[in-house]
Image (cartoon, rainbow, N blue to C red; front, top):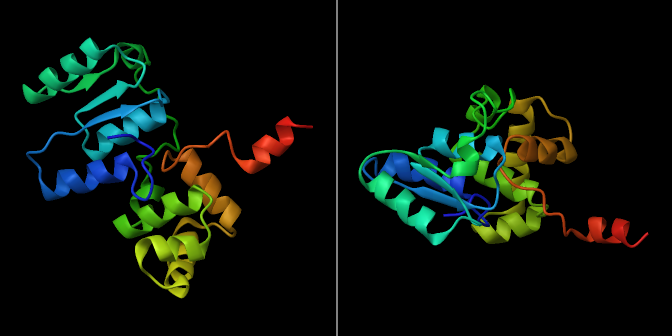
Length: 173
């Protein structure tokens, strides 16, 4: 699975899979080599992390390693020094304060979805989404949706899409 899947990212999916089926072994296949994403994936229960630009043989090696009970990281990721994870990284106690549903909504907020879009995607009311959002801000000590979005990005809950309308507008200046 990919780290930045829509609606429920690969990290949260790995966390839920590890809880629901501990014998299952997930491998993350992602373009993100950032240590924060790698560490968050492993902390969530993924057994492997392979970069999308890896050769097919490396993906095959990852599958063989994970099936045999060994964790696997792409060669370029293995070059990351121990402790390369940011101090406020995805395994932080702050992120652990949130429920799985809150982390799912946090991802959608971080991906710039409105409350109405999130409500529709999750079959919830807009008011329920706003309540979740406010509860998350209270738990995390944040005071705006912008701060909540920044928190989501900083903690690897979602990735920054460099092709946003605002980024495109800036590039045309």
